[in-house]
Image (cartoon, rainbow, N blue to C red):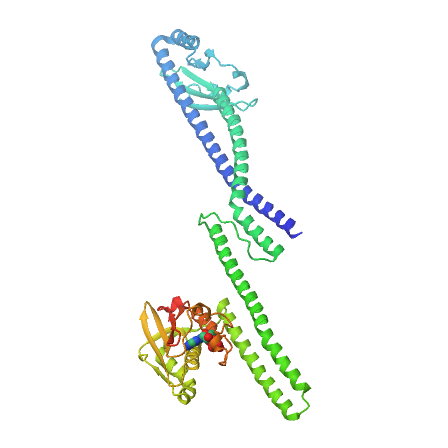
Length: 468
Ligand code: ADP
């Protein structure tokens, strides 16, 4: 239904665009033809009059020189030589009597009495219009010194025939032009609307399949429609990544919560079956602890998912690294002191990082927590910073270290090396660190020697725009 509607819509749009182009083109072409026709008509009329004027003066001169007989001879000679079509030649003596009259074919349809009226009166031009076919007879009058009047005229037949011929050809040309314009315009509109059709097909495919992997076909011409297609493709790409991220996050959360929830259920079940009230209370307390762990896991998982999917809100600003490091260290100061571990920051107070303040604190807190947790009593944890293209913060410890085969795995969600299974933890700290730093467009890496200690590094881009 909607496809039929949009097909109709596209055809109507195409037709409308096509007809507009064709109409404009046809109006222009026909205007040009009309203009040419008018110019041609005028030029021919002027040419006729010039020719007539020269014939009139030629005949008048001949009359002056050799009288009526000479004029007759010249007119007949001109006619027999076919110098021009037959002209109207009238000579009237000073008594206004017509003494000579040569006439072209079709003269009878003109009322020549107006010519009689001009005799003796004045030289000049008279235009007679035939009531029969609308043609004109243009007549030049020359009143000679002795009162004789000579009139030479030419009908517009030849000119009219030429113009009629031009009109007929022009009509054919105009018809061909209009047809070519309509076809051409439809073709242009069809080609021009190709991106719109592709856009429509893409949206329809997405609506039909509910999948965002369809893309608008672009031609790389960089015209506005092509650029619109490219922008829409970019948008579709982002939507697809986001959807995949959200879907993945949901799967991960569901998967990762299943085990702790089952554990929680078992503990609660166990507590229920206890008959000894003391043991039942212990069981409930244990269940409560487990519920807290589930809650913490859920929060960490959501954070990781948001950071990985790119939906984590970050307020990136220039943050003093020394202050944030001191805040993070203070969280574990008691535990470190208890176990005789020295935790120190070597970060200069001037060092600044482009990062979200809260998230940077979370990153450093996780790294310091791990460093303290996996370092033996009396060890040392050092937080430092240096610039290496990016701003790099390192957390080093003198702890148990990580086996080389485990190094690439420590960033995975829920990964815990065998040796650390006994320590408290969710196995989410480092994956959260990695997700947050990468959401800032930064990098993380680790160097470690089993039994000697580890150094975790996080690098943040130097420009805030890059980190945003
Ligand atoms: P958790 O510490 O909760 O187990 P993490 O994601 O923070 O989870 O760390 C993953 C694993 O990486 C840890 O279980 C541990 O095996 C290893 N690890 C992390 N930090 C250190 C460290 N500073 N020294 C040695 N091993 C570490």
